[in-house]
Image (cartoon, rainbow, N blue to C red; front, side, top):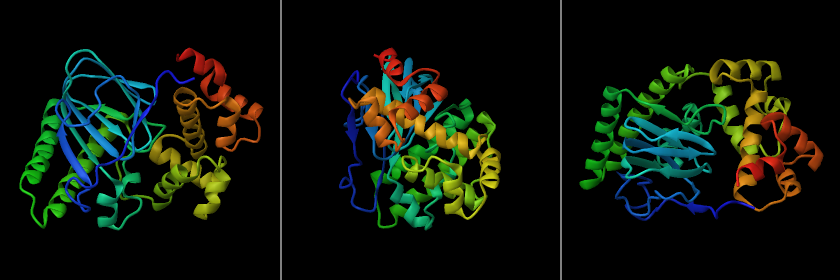
Length: 289
């Protein structure tokens, strides 16, 4: 059984109107912002900028130390949980995919940033003081725009968000030794998008290669170049991540989880999980209680 009931949060779409699917605020004072140890999931993207705090913040079981300069990226569906010691202070910036994707007419836009929807990479960075303050200046410019909304404010806010995302992606690439090119190979970014859509049904590189009209060898090579892991590894990581989520935060049986992830039988799922996680599914669930 899961340790705690999990909370789910959707974007408050009517706060500023249908076009402004973005918001910003102080974590310590923003209404409805969760700072308790209750596990919770967002249906939107979120970037947190920590100015003060002690303890940890976990995303899908990976803990990040709360300290000044810490930036944490959350993608829709990730399970978040605080283990803070004392007050936490900083900014949170959150938005719906449609806010920026439809404007750029690029369904792959957010797939180009390695800190989003990437089970193979960390979801956080520790920014040097100068870079952190530069990011906060952009956050505060967004905050000021909200205080005096005009007809063209959506354009200004998208421009500021785009600038911030690119700057953070460059910093992320430096810290994690990844490829910082956000305008590169169309195939590899399409693969990331397809993986998020089909990981439950499609487990083989060949299946994605067929969708992309390429070869498994080429897809593996491109994934290794851009993401530091083969396409096969990325598929397995995404399956393992979802399996862990369901083991920890649902009351589904192992057989039910195996079925939901399209494994041929429970034994096959057990073998997969043990190989990837080093422990059987039931033992993993028990160890986290």
